[in-house]
Length: 313
Image (cartoon, rainbow, N blue to C red; front, side, top):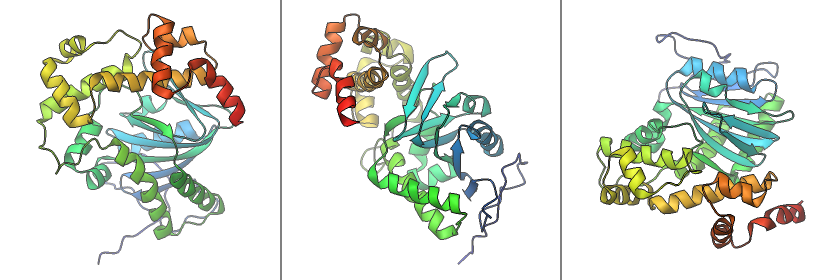
């Protein structure tokens, strides 16, 4: 059996012939950035170091990377190149595709923000997701987050375990690796759209167009999007678009758009936006239509979001 050597690591720019070293035993005074595999990094971030460390990781690994953020406290915001903003709150898990250090710079932390990040490259994604799923994920178009959800209780336990070990300088390779893989598993399952053995593989060109349609729904959910418009934008017939969404995403274009709008609306309402403002920001020209859709989706009216939050606190 081949023994995997682990060594202390400080992230730095490397040449293609100089692989990143791995973790063995890192003293408590060392930077809290651990290379678990050649393209799987664990990073502890806060408002003081998050930006530089993430950009440095992108420079080291290069290529599209999946950034999984587990926000423990504070607020994290992502502002895309068009000025659109996605706010993330403590207790949330976020999956973001980063193509370069410039895109990583658009992740902004508020004072007091902190959490863990996993930076995942193509080799690790192919190992745990399979060829087609990894290709699909790394070729997503646009800049919108791929995933934003509440961190599960199980994931929270692994985040807390890793945070404690990083804080105390306890870097047992097997222990760290097991926690990291458990933390990685749930987001990858959520980002996996179909088991490859269950359905025939779709042609790569069709997958790319379907991903473009999906990203349009993410990026332009405030616009009056329709199936005919999506078809024109991505060059597919209505039948191929609907069938492709069913086979690749296990949903319909309308249902995906509704889910994206409702999730975005809930976040805006939690931030204190008025119902009418939220309605326009998520693509509804009449607030009453938005209220009906929101109530049908969540089971309570938009105006109750603030009240429910006050009761829970």
